[in-house]
Image (tube, rainbow, N blue to C red; front, side, top):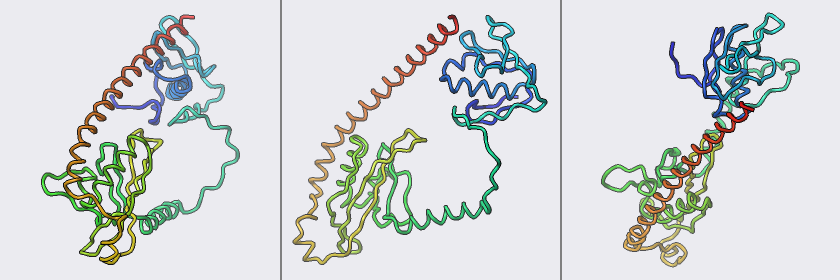
Length: 296
């Protein structure tokens, strides 16, 4: 049987007579190596065999394996004193859970808890400003239910670029705010922008905030549209704080900005390539270190 399987995340197989895992542990840190060896000990039958690579060992956890042939890196599981199988190893990370006390009664109505969380999100959606989630390529990847009021895609080919999706009056400020969010990691609150909805002018603020998810290295930014009350036409004509650049000025600035963005994108790609090379070199050094440790 063949299967795609993660030693660190997927539930382990069980009742195996032999496991061959060669030249994998050298790419893991010490805690993850011990976690994988715990998984192997759980998966093997008592007296089962474990084959490792020439630079690897099953010394940890202590007492789980005994050496059959150190040069060939062949080990055999040590049976527990009791007839019970060893406990299932902790997955999703190297941390160990301390000895548990008496079992606590389970919380009643788990379905209700999930419903409460759903209700909480729905309530937040109703009172939060309209928003959209943007990735570091400025592509809109998720929209809130009420954000359609601020979207007005341009004619031509369909584009997921956030600056091409929003209304014309908001594009210049949004492009600048996204640049600051991803290049400088800065949050931005724009000056009031005069936007006409069905002929009625309103002041709209753009609040762009960089977002970093611990479980996902990809960077995102949250764009929120904060709308004020309607203003009178005279007020809109006299308020200097909401005068916007002309279309020609916006076009010229966009033309000047595109080459700079291209250079920044190329520089970022070169930096990522250099980081990959450094990561590969680091893995090679770690492998050499493990070989020296095994030799000594």
